[in-house]
Length: 623
Image (cartoon, rainbow, N blue to C red; front, side, top):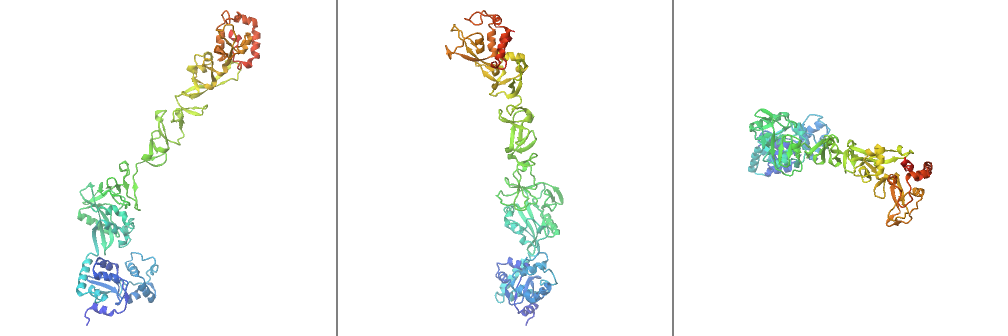
């Protein structure tokens, strides 16, 4: 005789069904999976069983509740306006349909993309987890689902352990550390994906991202709020190394499904004597509440200096110094933070605080070891793309970009210079450092007929160490220079003469090429005295030229200029004889003999031989 309601119910359930468990019931069984009965129940889920029992869930203490497959088909057929035989086929063959129905029941988590119910919506009323429910004691449930498989003592022990496990269900706080931190970050353990918990950027990261948390259980734990063993809130607990308050622990930002649960975390922190984050966001890193007083303070946490491959997004201790293992509740990026990591990446990375400077010239940051300071520009530039000015005005010395328009290269100095500190030579197509040049005559215009009208002002700057110029100081004793500088100030005011305008005479002294003449050794009876005349003058004075290449090691010709040549002739003007060992003749007698007119005619006819009339004639010298 059946005298209990649950005996009566179970005796009536003679048809087969596919058994499905609600997640709360399944999770409690999973806690006891070391127990044979729990393991057996988990094994038969989604199997065909003889009693018509399905959609099993927790009920009041010591009880579970279920719906028959027969009622479930009717409820779901009405709800989705589908034939019962199709619903039956789905319930019999789709292993995940039980989870889909639970998600529809909870109304806060989307069902599978490929679920038979996807897109149908809630067409009608009805939920097998609400309608047609039948409560039954857990022990009786086990005996009917697993008849004669376990003894009464085994079933009784299981029921007691199940009740003990249920005491940990519902809503409760737990503190976890180590690998468990990574587990409770996993969104698969969330009750549902909503609120700040569901929208957290860390919810779907791989477990390795949280290594810096998991490797430091001495200073980092997690406070987790559970509901039916599913996460509905979490927050990190830090043991601070330094802090400007007396709190040993700090509760970081609280991520919850319901905003009202934030206060539960804070109450927990107060009861523990912890400080906590004043503003539940990721922007206020320094604002901390302790003993109901909020202040902006500095804190640090010391972690192991492991080689972490990935990093999480850190809400408060944003800056990490890998050289010391110190976390700071700031994100400073100044010079004191060089080498630190800013842990603000949502993809496992970080931003390293570089030893960088900002360049206005390039409009971007440059690593300090790749930069050089430009004192003239008061700016930082790339050292590999810079040139250094080491000469010129002191205020213009320093580094410039290679592309800077006003910087030129000086060949002689083998350095760069600001253009305003240089002199440009059109003749050499080259810049010289100002103060290192000499004015050098490079051309003598000869477009006029008379020597007095010659323009000697064509000069260019040359470097004072140039190899192709002769300094004026080395020419000042030459007769031609004395004559020209007396008459033309350009020569006395000029520093040098280009070698192209000069040639060496027989004394190895420089003379102007335009004054150059060739003189020849004349034959005399005195072998000790040697005199040289131009061919024209030798002919005029009726002297014979020496044709032998050398006479007593004396060359038969030599190079001089008109100024030295006539200086030597003029020195004989008042002598008894123009030349020794020759007939006596003075210049006065020579003029009388030849006549002034004849001399002028002679020079007129031979002007092509006299370097464009530069030869001072005997007539001119006499006058």
